[in-house]
Amino acid sequence: DAASAGNDYARMLLAIAAAGEDPTDFGGRDFVALLEAEYDGNQMGDDSILNDDFWGVMALVAAGLDPDASDAIQDSGSFILANQDEDGGWSWGVGQPSDVDDTAAAIMALIAAGHSPGSAPVADGLSYLKAAQMSNGGFESWGETNSATNSWAINSIAAAGQDPTAATWESGAGSDPVDDLLT
Image 1 (spheres, one colour):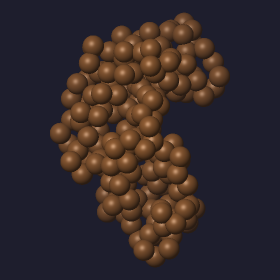
Image 2 (image 1 turned 180 degrees about the vertical axis):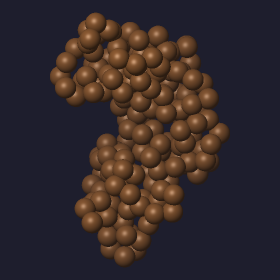
Image 3 (image 1 turned 120 degrees about the horizontal axis):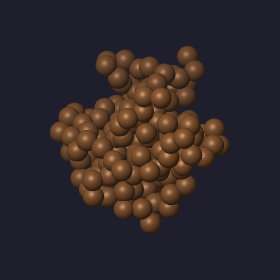
Image 4 (image 1 turned 45 degrees about the vertical axis):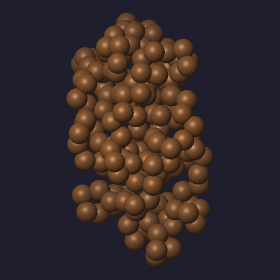
């Protein structure tokens, strides 16, 4: 049991919630309290890293916390918003270039925190994803598409209430992200 930091606690919380177990008493540890202890009054975990906030928000919501009643969720959501890049995307770290995987995680975290799928930051994030879509329908990651990046993008598109197989998400060649994922 090596979980000892914000991202570790968030991953454990997500797995515990997915298994239908009690995240406040799992293996003798309260993972909700451990993750909440990573909240510094502004954001969760390391203030130079964004992905601990993406995962932290999604994990606390998955553990059953009310996003509107949790300062950790609301303030971390604000921290995520404050660090959206000019291109509409997000990175794993503050001031780093945007990428599809982290943009997708940020979109899902914001929606989990209660932001409308139609809000400008979410729409800008989705536009970033669309701009990173390649001719095979998948999403660019290190110059090509891969199943992990496609899965992240597809999940964020679905979280925003959109259909990743709709014409909106077809590439110029007529392929959508699910087509590329399944090939």
